[in-house]
Image (cartoon, rainbow, N blue to C red; front, side, top):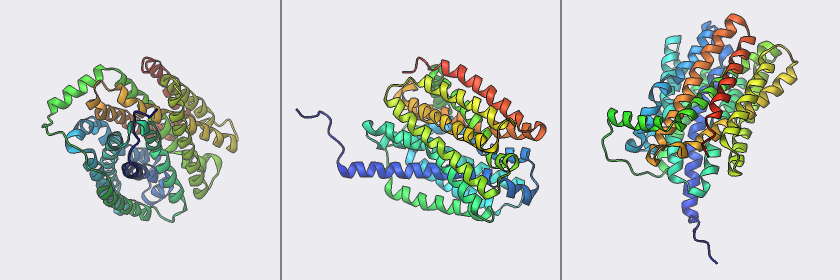
Length: 398
C-alpha cells in the first residue's frame, strides 16, 4: 500500500525550513530589543540618573504601539503581505536601535523605543502568518514550537552579550546592523505570498474584530497572554537588578545567570509542543504554568531563601512559564472563527502580550521603588490567581 500523502519535494522542504529559520531569526532580533534595556539598567541609571520607575516606563513604551496597533496590523496582513510587513519591521528595528544608541536624553530614548516597538509588533504578527503559509501542515506544530522560543532566546542573548560589553551604545548599534543584514536575507530567501486585492477599511477591521471577539476563545487566549506577559516581564525586566541588589552578583554574573534563566523558558516552549502533540488539554497546561509561576514568585521576591534556592526558583518560574506562549500561539488558528481571521487572532494575542509587557514593568518598577521587592511578589501572585480563572474558560478549546 502507498501513502495517500506525498512528502514535500526536498527543494521545497529546504526552502520552507530556510524561511522558518529566517522568520525565527527575525523574532530573536526583535526580542533582543526587549532584553537589551534590562541588562543596561545599571549603565542607564549611571549615565542618565534614571530611577526604576523611569526605567519601567522606558521598557513599557516599547509595547505601546503593540497595544494600539496589533489588531489593525493583524487585519492588514492579508492585504499588505506578511513578507513585506516582516521586512518593514526589521527596518524599523534598525532605525530605532540606531536612534537609541545615539540618544542623549530620556525623550530621545523613549522615541527610539516607540520606533522599535513598531518593528517588534510587525515582526511578531507577520511571523506566525508567514509560518502558516510556507510550512507544510504536518510540520506546523514543530514550526510553531520553534517560533515560540524567539523571545527567551533573544532576551538570553541580550543578557549575555550586554553583560560582557563595556558600554550599552555599541550593543545597540550592533542590533541595528543585525536587523539590516537579516532584512537583506529575508528579501532574498523568503518566498512572496499572494495578497488580498480588496481594499481594507476601518469598517472592515471593526467587523472582523467583532466577529473574532464574539467567538470568545480568541479573547480568552489574549487575556491569558496578557497575564503571562505581566508575570514574565515583572521578573525578567528587573532580574539583573534583583540578582545584583539581593544576591550580591556582579554585572557580568547577573547577565549570565539571567541568560540561563531565560533559556529555561525555551525548554518549556518545546515541552509544550510535545505535550500538545500527545493530546494534553490546553487549559491544563495554561493553569499549571500560571500557578507554578505565582508560587515561584513568592520565593523569588520575598527575602526567605538563600541565593542558590532563589535562583533555582527563577529557573522553575521561567521553565514553567514557557508552556504558555507555545500553547497559546498553537491555539490561535483553531480559536479563530474563520481561517482568514487567524492573523487577526494572532494580533489579538499580541495585544494581550503587549498589555502585560507594558503594565508589568511600570507596576513592578513603581511598587518596588516604593515598597521594596516583596511588592513584586504580591503583584505576580495576584496575576497568577487571575490566570487560573482565565484557564478554566479555555476548557472548551480542544
